[in-house]
Image 1 (tube, one colour):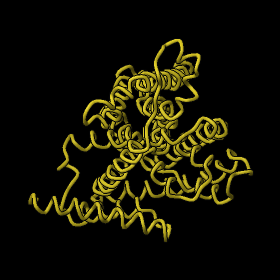
Image 2 (image 1 turned 45 degrees about the horizontal axis):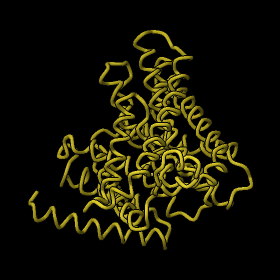
Image 3 (image 1 turned 60 degrees about the vertical axis):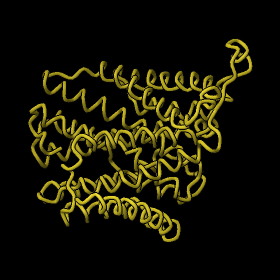
Length: 371
């Protein structure tokens, strides 16, 4: 594509993103859906650009988007909201994941005659929700604060369940046996240790942040440090997504974490994000979200209708299943009754599911092509 045309297209896309955001605020038509449609038009429908044109940049871009959105979303979560939402989050996350895993597992076993472990593996891959979709979406919906917090936390926590259970099922298929104890242990280790890494990073960064600000052009050092925290957690075998979210939460609640007693012991002043940094990070998330959802639209493949039909049927079933799951998980005393309807409709799949779906075929697992 001509460079001038590419640059003009980027500018037009940014303007369209703002127009779509305004349409969403007025008509409640999700801007993320419109961005996906744009990607679908310029990608599979008109073949102006294909997913192969991105090469290795595509997966890197999606990861950067995920980490940035999780961090920025975490900075808006206060401990009081977390405390009120944690019970509902835990119940909704686990119930939605295991019900989805079992339902999809039964479909794979009964409809496609797949082995039980392979069917459950497929169910675990699509058992969670996507932070990259959920966080931008709930911010623009008129929902109660607790309900938004529940959905944001669910999207982050469910990624851990997807990754741990899917990989455990893959290993069980290859080894011929399933270790339940090891699977549960890995879940707890990934949650707890990833959270500790994120909170430790937030505590350290809060102590040096006021010094970092004295350096010229240093405003991007905070997201850079988030990437470091994410990478360290992933290299250690834990959830980088949880660490990035915990880093943002810790930095936003440093006034509660760093009590006067602790500050007197370490003899250092802790700091948090100022308003300028918050506004800048919000704008960064808006831009990344814009290109991310167009990229998702470009990634959709229309050359084989059979997987699309199967995916559509499973999607409808998951929407039906989500309604009783939300009803069973959330109390009737929600901030707004409309929250339950929103929560029942928000079940997007994202980066974790996309990455995990490629592994069974790479490992040569029977039925892996269906994922």
